[in-house]
Amino acid sequence: MLLQVNASHEEQKHGFNFDELLALPTQIEGLPVEVIGLMGMAALGDDPELARPTFAELRVFRDRLQSEWIRSAIQLAHLSMGNYDEAGAAFEAVLESTPDSSAAIPGGSHSATPP
Image 1: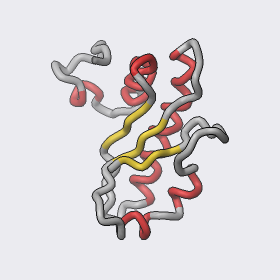
Image 2: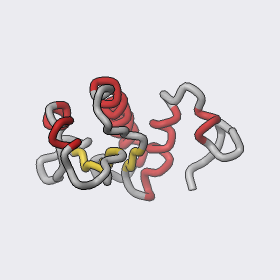
Image 3: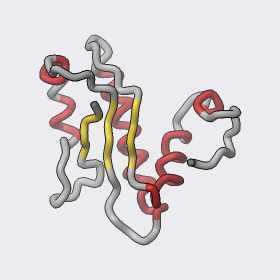
């Protein structure tokens, strides 16, 4: 299961805010499902590039949770970010901080485009 995060901090959207998730590792471990990552959407807009900061913030937050929850059984290996129109910005936001991005891309190319 992916936990929904209100990554764009919009009142009309649902999901955990960052502070709520930081306080929840014990409750999440007690769920009868396996939590494997986070999902979030950027604010709706005409330019998908405007979504990039939101996706980058979500990725950084996921990395922070992984380091702070190191003693827990929760592994946040997956990120689901945005919709199809924002796929390029989401894909690049993940690649910007992946130490060996080529390992995560079929064919090992940094110039790969999202599906």
